[in-house]
Image (cartoon, rainbow, N blue to C red):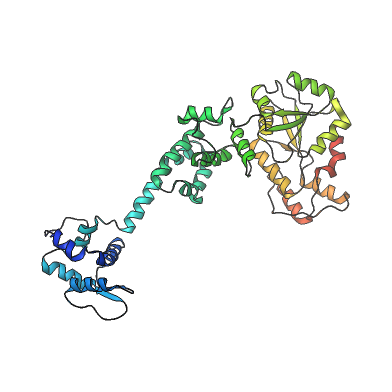
Length: 414
């Protein structure tokens, strides 16, 4: 029977409250309601450990007799049901009586089904985003599984506007031309503060941006700034920089290239006035020591060189994308260790490049000639540009830093 259905016999609510609604029987009503929620039969005994004298007396009045002696108090639900029917207080029995006292009962199974449907509806804006932008489909599926949204929003009602705004923001990215995060938030979401740091919307949107741009893992304020910038959104356009040698295309860059000296470009410069032309080939290194040595050895005659200085910054990604779109072929070299492979893999997800002495064959050749190399440490990583490279690192278990290959790299730059 649906316990929330209208009873066929009228309930005497005033007598019911006096009989079953007393505070000293609240424990019994709560146990009955819990059984209704779990769709369990209202038969057999329910017990209360260490009852008070008042609770024993209330149970005695309810049943019209003294309950069994003992430390606990036990009441048979069948007996309570019989009292309610026989007295005419609740002709349809215990389930209808408890519903009249405490309100409609939703079975747990039905509540879970309803909640599951509500979460499905809340995720629909992201599901639609994944269907429209297939390269984000994997991220939207992961977001369902990893629990981030449930931790941030807690309820489907709170998650629905959060995910709708996330989808709206991601559909407007990457921003071209670049603009500030507040300006973008005001334009797309109606509030300049919608994407302020620390808000649930900023957290989920940053996760989506990483899926959109392939930005590597990290943490901290500088990392978050660079994640925003990877999608054309600027929180701070002067702190993110990239180190270059002989990259031309603005008066300042042309002057620096003429002297053969390295230059530091800010994200602000690259957004406001990117190089006007791209060279045919641009080489990329991971460590500043390589770029400094190239400037010392070759000066103004050195081919264009970009240094990541570790993880690629928003400025570095912005420059390399601009050069690639301008027709430049990008050649990359980094450290032969697991961290170096991760940096290279993250860059490859953002912009295409070809290896520059950065293959398994190069690694094996260098380990064969270089003395006393340090051991390889850390968790393994993949090398999508040359799967044999990861295999070679795991086999030889030594790391080769860029400085070891410096003579070869400088010879290539001659």
